[in-house]
Length: 236
Image 1: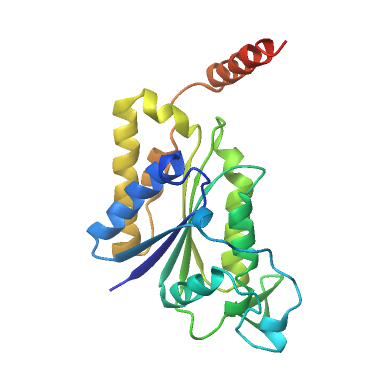
Image 2 (image 1 turned 135 degrees about the vertical axis):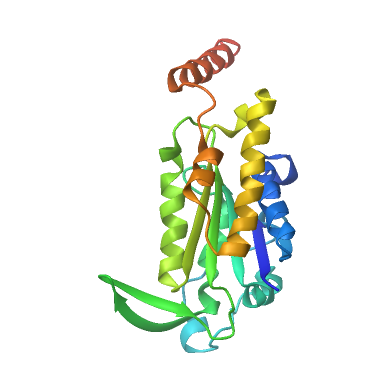
């Protein structure tokens, strides 16, 4: 049975749009009889990486820092698929950035040069073979999620595993205003989860349905600017 570890990187946790999209994705995964464990990054006390590389060359595979990453490392080692659910800030929430940097102890620096880039790999006791991104954002275009996508895809490439998805939902806040479209998007997200487990990949038409525009760029931009102008005037 496939084991999935999902990490929700939203500071709003259950109240955020990241949770809404991720929850639908995980429902689909469970429908395919995979086991799911969900972790909220905000609930973990994870200090920044010290960058001293003791986990590579001294106490190999062991981080010298004692914090909540000690709880997460066994979960990471035992998962087949790692899902990172991330709201787009500039570009990443701090908790997720710290978590990504602290993956060093489960990475083995046995290097190879592939497609013009230096790559490492996970230690042999790490089962993860795929990293999947679920990303949401507030601005209109899907390109606004591009930096987050590139970062997580790069992480997957650096450790020699597949990059899955990505599940991308721009201007996610508008889903609450259009029930019909919201249901269509979330149903597609459930299908994406099921496909990931049953077929190992997600069809492009499903990904496109999840990312579909709900409003014109101009209309959303005017709304944002109007809301800010009202807020600005209230402080004059």
